[in-house]
Amino acid sequence: MLTAVKGMNDLLPPESAKWAHVERRARDLFERHGYREIRTPMVERTALFVRSVGEVTDIVEKQMYTFDDRDETSITLRPEATASVVRAYLEHSVHKKEPVTRWYYMGPMFRRERMQRGRYRQFNQIGVEALGVAEPTIDAEQVAMLHGLFTDLGVERVDALVNNLGGPADRPAYRAALVAYFEPYRAELCEDCQRRLDKNPLRILDCKVPRDKEIAAGAPATIDYLGEASRMHFDGFQAALAAFGVPFRVEPRLVRGFDYYTGTLYELQSSAGDLGAQNTLCGGGRYDGLVEELGGPPTPAVGFAMGVERIILTLPGDADSFDPRTDVFLAALGDAARLHCLKLAQALRRAGWRADFDHRGGSMKAQLKRADRVRARAAVIVGDDELAARTVVLKDMSAGAQSVVPEAELAAALHKLLA
Ligand code: HAM
Image 1 (cartoon, rainbow, N blue to C red):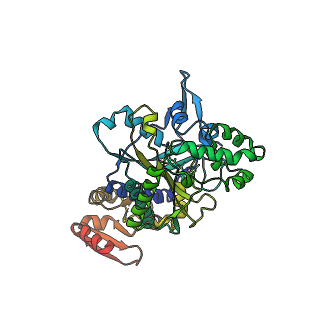
Image 2: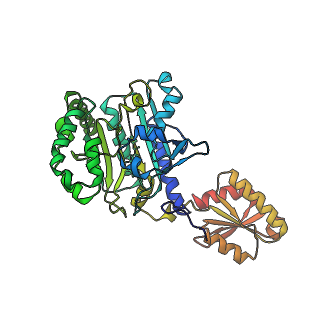
Image 3: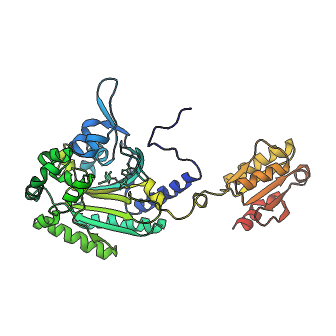
């Protein structure tokens, strides 16, 4: 038997109802903040990710699904969406049409990671990107929006961690400090980090090897190397977070594994639910240099992405409680009644009810059993007698009570029963 590819999961009902719930709430909240949806392809030219995420990053070096297209162009299943969003922003000259752009997206991303709970090879992100705004208040607004979303979803024990990575002006001094710190440990670092030490020392800070992590724990912190502009931005960010009433913690060791970040970094973590080690629900930050790096004008930008699988693992309530229940199940005896019920079902659906009908027919007992199985709240029963009298039998599936209702009064009776 053929099975799904390792790390790429099917999503079946009722679990899919939980997902739909999260997506709906996120969509609604983002749109209330002025974000509009963008959809980009799942495949991009490999060069896009190499240039934006960074050549010496785990994602580009180890995790991308890269292959040659039939014309030998190297293409890659997107490992994240920020690069695609910026590509689309430039390709459609959006920067020339609007000074501020707020977009959100949702969809699958692909990284060939070592799998564990909360870490998959195809996973889903919901993210936002705001382009054209340099002010730190929008960074804070994004964190506040996330905080609001998690509160709304009932995700508990959420911590917001924030940091500032420094801008391009601060980078040389910080880089030099990192090299000076790590150089004496060179021989103890893993092979990858020895290479990173020469090419991109900042990336040593996201190494997962235990000894490297121990060494990195004593490394200089970015916030000790912030120049005046970055310091002011970080202060403004924190003041705005406080104004939004979002509890947060400055985490000077917070780094994120992408080269495009500049300045603000943030992550929201939760110790709730079944998350275990993969407790980062979402991460984001500023990437003020990326638009220019990809060929556009200097454009400040900030955004985040959250992992849907991880949010689902923290959600209280079992999947059934998210699954929309059938309002009414129509059961019919006899061919004429069956055709009539089909018409009734259509009318009820047009009126907004979730109406189910068992096309297979069978005995009344079998049909009502099925009504139970789909957790219908009410059943409408039609036989020859009801058909002749233009009535139906309306049954309250939880109380068991039933009554004869004239067909013309069915809608009103249903309203009363299901209100
Ligand atoms: P990221 O931190 O790589 O950032 O991913 C964001 C979130 O996606 C993570 O916090 C996690 O919840 C989820 N995630 C990442 N990898 C996996 C995986 N293998 N399995 C399950 N969930 C995963 C980004 O992708 C940036 N593009 C975020 C951003 C947007 N920065 C600025 N704008």
